[in-house]
Image (cartoon, rainbow, N blue to C red):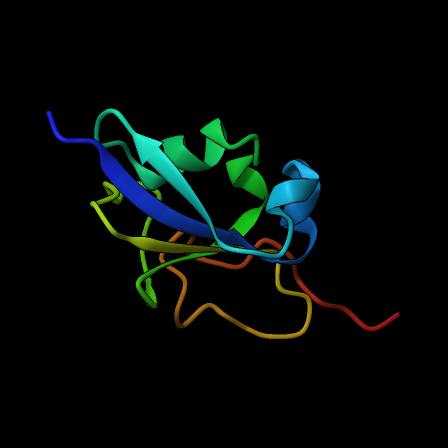
Length: 101
């Protein structure tokens, strides 16, 4: 079976789960077999519950998406100011509800 290579970038506080050498930059990951984006995220040490938006090659995908060779993966944490409900495919509603204090 051919190995799968993907380019990954984590944004903002998701970097806290990664080694310093992977903070705020693209890094390559080689996979022995295809896997879901949720399993890939978990294997990086990033809890999927902390991810609010996954883009693959610029398109929102669900956790069940199976990564393909040469995919570009962008992982975003919970959005505090933007309503992403029209673009996210992970959940029916965003993780947080904003309220005035």
